[in-house]
Length: 143
Length: 184
Image 1 (cartoon, rainbow over the protein chains, first blue to last red):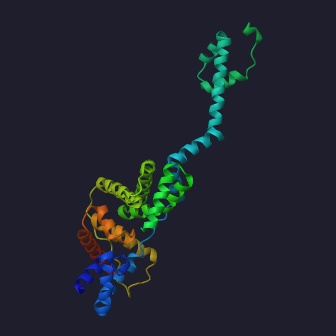
Image 2 (image 1 turned 180 degrees about the vertical axis):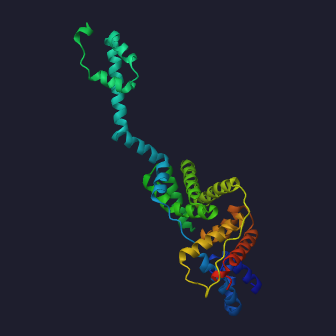
Image 3 (image 1 turned 30 degrees about the vertical axis):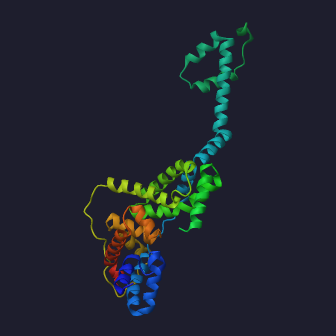
């Protein structure tokens, strides 16, 4: 390796020979040993820039970003949805489904009574179904 | 990245593709800081960098079940996806007249009581002042510590062209940061 080539590589890859192309490292070390003053000047100049570049801030990821990414993984998403279903949302949905089933049963048994109630107001159908389930049925209506 | 590191990546990707929660977390722990730094240094914008990092992982999760070890290094693949996303954003930016980063008034000495944080901001500004390809070269080789061969392959240029970009980048940085003692 020539001194010019050594300086060129220093200019490109900096003062740390371990960051140089693997194919040039041995020759660079040999030149540094053979012509220490040439190498030292070039390396010192590069080292000053390297020290300043090392002051660039680091950007550690925040917890929110990390969790968003983990939740975006298919397996994690499936698991989270399953947990939500079991722990609340799913329970609510299950209750609503049971309510709807109850309404359906009520419609089958007493359509004349229940159907007008469903059409009467603007209430949420699920809330309405739950309310209907809570009302005791009048045995006379079943006859 | 060492061969052992690449093997560990392959194992984690395989397990992540199978839905192993521990592997998913390990992969995020292992790769997110590098990806976020890459995007931040390429874009100079924290929110955009987070978006790029997140989108890169979303693509990784999709690719993981089909990942074939040995065809490419996962770390290199992640870098390629992230860089493409960075360039998409850089292309969409409204062009502005680029100004060289502010230089501090030369004071009594190279350190001049500047706090490390201030120096860090100056370095960031100097990096953002580079043309994108020079910035990419210095970010990949200096900060991401990729080999010249990996960085050149990612940038789809020869190692000689990479070396030229690096030399120009370092000259520009030395000039921009000379008041901090970078010029020697």
